[in-house]
Amino acid sequence: MAFPINRPRRLRRTETLRRMIRETRLAPDDLIQPFFVCPGRGVKRPINSMPGVAQMSVDQVVRAARETHSAGVPAVILFGIPQHKDPHGTQAWNDQGEVQRAIREIKEQVPGLAVITDVCLCEYTDHGHCGVVLSNDVDNDATLEPLSREALSHARAGADMVAPSDMMDGRVGAIRRTLDENGFIHLPIMAYSAKFASAFYGPFREAAESAPQFGDRRSYQMDPPNGDEAMREIALDLAEGADIVMVKPALPYLDLIYRAKHEFHVPLAAYNVSGEYSMLRAAGLNGWLDEERAVMEVLTSIKRAGADMILSYFATEVANRLRG
Image (cartoon, rainbow, N blue to C red; front, side):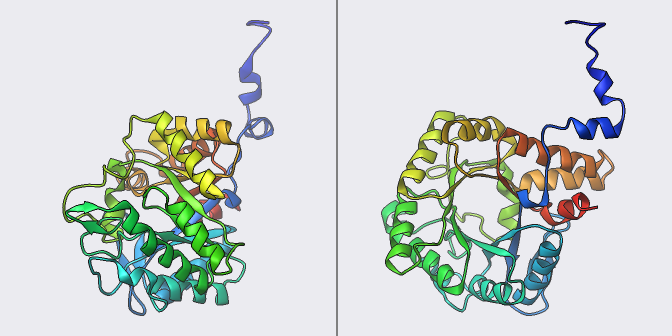
C-alpha cells in the first residue's frame, strides 16, 4: 500500500526504533588492525600523511596490540620496515627480522590475538617493487620462491595467517605448497586477490617506505575499470588454496565486494586503505565533517556490501566506540 497507509518514517522516529530494525551491524569482530613494525626500541614515529598512525618498534607494537585486543578486535596484520634493503628483499625472510620478532612477542604477551602477516617484497627491496626485478621489469616466476620463503619464515615465527599482497600469478599455490611441505597445513592464507593499482595507496607508501623507485605497479596490480577480471583473479586464488580472499581498496570497489560475496560465498576481506583513512581523518581534523559519524558510515557500508572482515587503521578506536 502507498502513502498515507505506508509511512516508513514511523520506524525512524526514535533511536530505539532505529536500533530495532537496523539491518547491518558493525562489531569489533569484523575488524583487523594494521601495524607498521620498524627497527629499534621505544620507537613511535608518526606518519605525516596518516595522523594517528605511526611506525613502531616491536615493544611499542606489542603495547598497541594489547590495546587492540582489549578493545575486542580479534586480529592484527603486520607490515615490516627493515633496517637494510637490497635488490632481492632478503630481509623479508630473516627469522630475526622486525615482523618475525613482533609475531613471537605478540603471541607470547597477547596470546588471544590473531597475528596475520603481509607477504610481499615491496617493503624490503631497495627498488620498492613487489618482486624480483630483472631487465627493469618484475619477473613473476622468479618472485614466487622468495615470497614462499617469507611466508614460511612468518609461519615458523608463529603467525596465525599469511596474506600475500604482491599480485604475482601463482603465488597462492606456491605459498600453499611450501607451507604444506614444511608441516604448516593448518595455516590459512588470506589472499589479496583483487588488488587494484589505486591512487589511494599513497600514504601507505610513506608508512611502509615502499614507493617504487622507477615505473609503477600497473603491470601486476589490477586495472581499476575491470570487474570481470577481479572475479577471475578471485577464482584463481581459491583454486590455488586461498582460504580468505580480499578486495582492495574498499570504497571505490564496493560493487566488487558485493559481487564477490554473492558469486563465491567464501570468507571475504576488504581493505579500508590508507588513502581512505587519510581523507576522513584530514576532513575531521579540519572540521569539514563529523569524523566519528563518517567513519562509522564508511565501515558499515563496507560490511553492508558483503565484507566479513575489514582491515582498517580505525579498527581499535572504532571497536572501543562500539563497546561503549
